[in-house]
Every structure is written in C-alpha cells, then in structure tokens.
Image 1 (cartoon, rainbow, N blue to C red):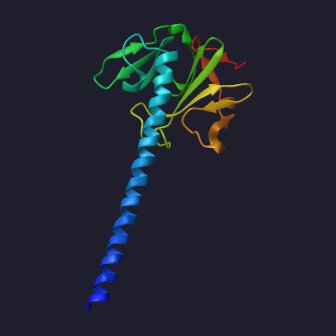
Image 2 (cartoon, rainbow, N blue to C red):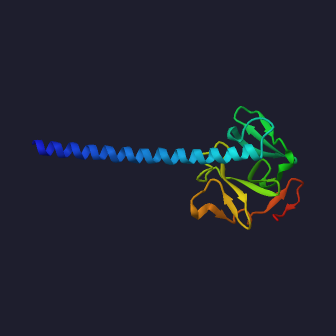
Image 3 (cartoon, rainbow, N blue to C red):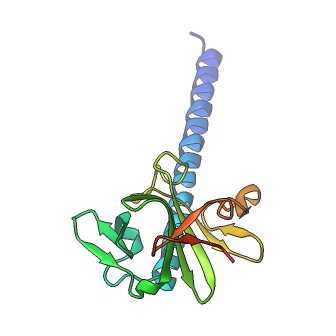
Length: 170
C-alpha cells in the first residue's frame, strides 16, 4: 500500500470514529435530557404533591387502595400523599391505573402510565406523561417539543372519583 492510500484510509477511519463518537454523544445527550426532564417533573410532584415519606423519584408503582393513593417503593415499603385529599380520581383499575388525577389549589395534574410508552418504558413507575391543566388545555411536562406541549388527551379520558362516582373535569 502506498503512503497516500494509507493516509486516505487513516483519514476515513478517523472520520468514521468521529461520526460514531458524535452518534454516541447524541444518544447520551438524548438520554440525559429525558432523565433531566423526568427528574424536573418529579421534583414538581415532590413540591406540589409531597409524599408522607420518600420521593416520587423512588416510586415504583402507584396503586389506589380503597379511597387512598399509595405509592410503593422498590424495597416494598409504601407511602401515601402528605395531604390525601389531593388525590381525586383515576382512570383504569385501582391496582394498575392508566392515569391518576391529582388536584392542588383548583388545578388538576394528571399522571398517565404506559410501560411501553416513550417515557414510561424508561421510568421506574411507568409514568409516560405528567400534564398540568391549563385554560382549556393540558400542558405536558415530559413531552416538551412544540407538537406535544398542548394536549387534550386528558379531557378525553373518563375518570372515576375515589368514591366510585364519575369524576367530571371542570
């Protein structure tokens, strides 16, 4: 192999290494951005809907037991909300809800669960989205690109109040 062919092969290899490093770097950036977004959203939950003990960051499942919302941790322990009145409704089955509706100072917050969803597949508790009720719209804390920021999907869901009656979003 002549010297110019060797240099060309080395340049190609360096370029391929650089491209590979950029792809890995972008994958790492995307993963860390997703973790930061989820971490910020769960920080919001900790501040607005604090648990009696522990953090939403460490919750592995949300379950409705009678009229109470319980959060279970990986080690098997559990906690309720510091203010149990903040839990107002659910969608789905009590042992595996597809959504939980919380309320603070007149504003609803919906946690939707999907273990196969974009965010849910990455989250310990399968939280796929956290949405805050705005004026006629729901604003996503996790899907922050412009296409997904405003959603009406929560309004389309049928919620059951913790007493078993239909829960109407007002």
